[in-house]
Image (cartoon, rainbow, N blue to C red; front, side, top):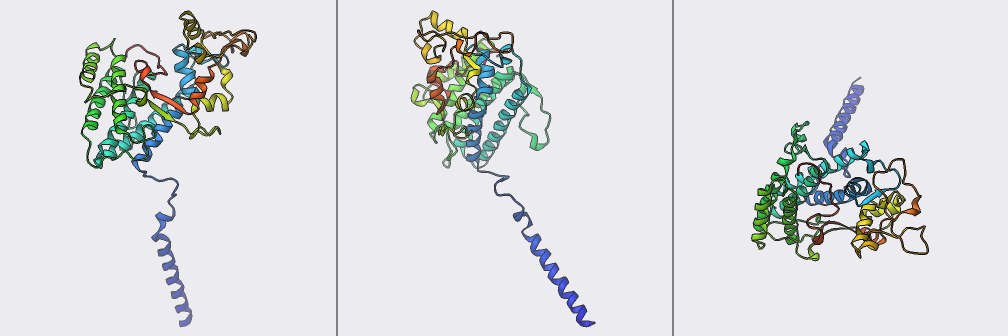
Length: 370
């Protein structure tokens, strides 16, 4: 009998030791190393830059809406957007992408501020303000002041007016320029700077160029604020440097593997060429007719000749907003987007270029208000 009791006690002891051993490293064992809850701030910066360039300037987020609305591109097939018929799923995706990037950048800003990394804080704030402007230009009134506080329980932020968002962004960018002018000793943007490769001086020029862009945008709505902003920047370019040569342009570079990989291929190239969507779009008649009237040498850059005119070079644009499901005359009747425009997009996406400072192409449509 004693032998049985000892055996039971021994077995129970082994079981207890086994349970303790299992629970000791339970959290570690059940944590997926490929899904970290915390990531280096510079990695989040890299994600935000790539995610923004890939999704907000692809064929859905760029051509179908802004390029069509501004009169540069016309739809040949599936011409819903040309008649301002929104696709709910597309709009919701754009919304998700923007706020995902904004929140990621806020995490970067908070981490940089906590570690006194002023350069990283300034860089993240610069691109965040740029994304905020893209969001309000696209939808006008949006959740802004309380939009990034879901982790503190604020799940239904109010919609702020565009008239309040623009001045707030200008104030943020002004304060960000001050950060650039007074960096902390330990400042380091890290390897996540996919835009300028850690060149903080170029980031400061980008920051102030965005300030000028915003001031130009509000010049008809708030001329006093626009005037004071422009005078502050242009009055002291040593403290408020701006983009003054093409060497300082903000280009997002893609590896260009040609494999329809969102991490390597530019989004127009992926959607139009690798995704076989090129036949959906033509250069608009507005664009082509204007270039013809001006005898503008950029016409063959923006557009290809129509395919049906084999004996001569003819450029013909499609009319924006036609009725029906496709433009009449067939695909070969219209000029597609120029080869050069597609070639350059295989490797870069211009976020801010000197020659486009006042419009910051691709141009967002102006709505009532700002």
